[in-house]
Image (cartoon, rainbow, N blue to C red; front, top):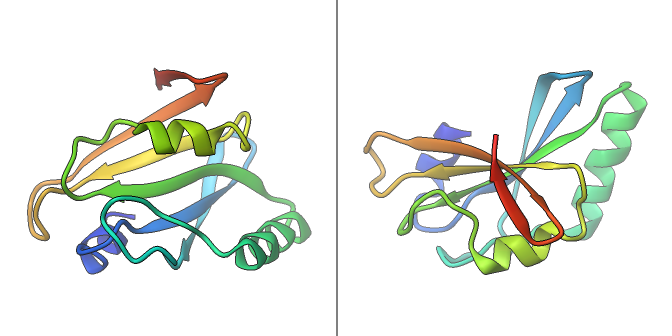
Length: 118
């Protein structure tokens, strides 16, 4: 995820993390269709395809990740609004204020508009 954030540094990167039980087992990069540092948008068909592949492999969606390249790794109001459609899914945010800088990675649960770091 950090490598993805560095590679797509001009834009927010985004992707999915599949889990088996409590263990993360696969990271699936997605394209940020918004192509901006201010938000991310994933193609619904690509997300659905990934979720189906996870399910076929006996996995489930554990987290959605994205990067913040100009702000701290804390959910924005846009992130909080987007999370409403994904109850129980963890949100991983990679803070990377320069391409080669030291990353800060934080994970949150966002439920009913409430943000809790885990």
